[in-house]
Length: 308
Image 1: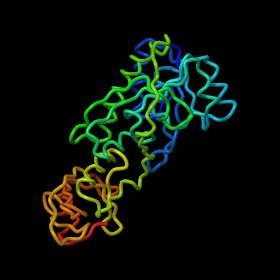
Image 2: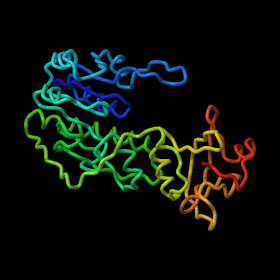
Image 3: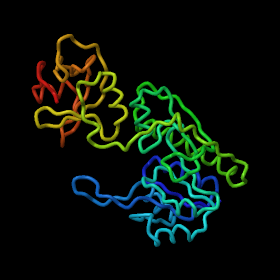
Image 4: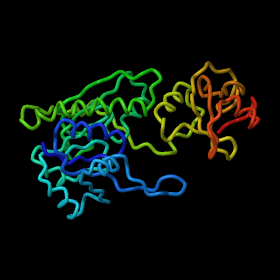
């Protein structure tokens, strides 16, 4: 099949590679524009755009898909199918209408659970036992289209969003290339989702990583996994921002206020709304990550202090 591929982050790379390896013609790659990255705000292409350049594929990075110029560029290849994997923008209806076999999305959950921008993080935040991927025929609604295929996988006990996303990306890529021949021949039937079972997940913001010590320790552990590698779990000691790494839940101590430091040694233990959070590694903003013991020695953190 001749395809136009839409994708931006690392999650989309296995699907692009799978299309090429399976012999499909990728006539055009569409990715987000370069964004400023780091303290020096260096304009940086997303991973899919870099991969397209390295492979010599035609690349389009439009600021919008809603103008006539973008529509003309997308129509020019006369593609059989548009394949979308974590592109990062909603496709307008007139874009969805262009390819003769429609637009196919590789989504990081088993729909209708976790429609939206953060399905991997949502599954971890909710404590789901399993996750998976869906191959969906796109329509105007947010992840509401009928499904061609889906596959599930257990979530590891300590698996974080980065590791789970990589596994789902590979699983989705395999399912995509298994599904496309049936779409091309007309043999693949897309089954409507059960809207009554739908759950939604919003885009993750940097501020979502801030610790609310009134939450349970178990919940904070889930948030640490969900927000790794970005935005991370962080709190404040005075005005200093601290990123928390390698956390675990522990039994709490009666009568202690959420945010109070209970232990400051090989691990730092902080009281939560229920239970306590044991922190093995911390990173002050602009510095390298340190084991808890080294942080306590250097920063003189002591039991009885309050973190915010």
